[in-house]
Image (cartoon, helix red, strand yellow):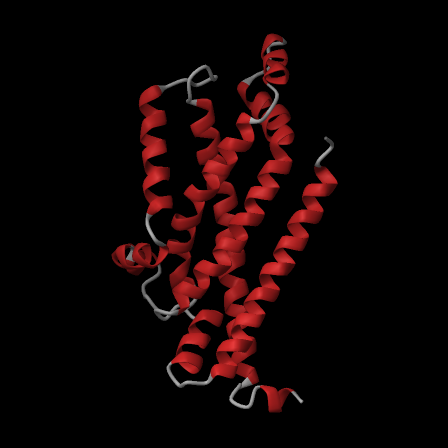
Length: 222
């Protein structure tokens, strides 16, 4: 049945491409999570009226975030070719896509982190500060726990965006389902290969969304 529906599909290549997509998404997502939270915290804490208020630093970080989240991903990959060659040593393969994926997604997630932190009840923050809470206590006991539903929801959206980024990266040799759909599907006019790669990407996206929604619902106490 499957061989009739997808006559041009080489199943071994499909599984390899799927593993590459999952690898790129997982590694870049973990890095994006930590870098995004760091940038988001800095954006929030250095803004007006916050603990580390510093207009100059805030402007520098905001400029970095705004620039890199505004560059179209396919252009970002090309711009980062010299950097990628220095870090990874090549422009081909799944690992070569990681620098562009992380640099493209982390600023995007950082803005979501900042928005989540701004939604934390100011009364809770002021109460912690009035009791003499240290900055580290305020961050790890108040800000991050109180904003966790927004942070999880944000990383879910970012993960889905990363799956799309991996497909674009695949078009220029990074591997994964995007690479398979382009080389074996589009260029060879094998529509069934392109269709199957698209279905698998959608399945990955639906699974990420389901897990993200489940975790958000579990930790959201409102």
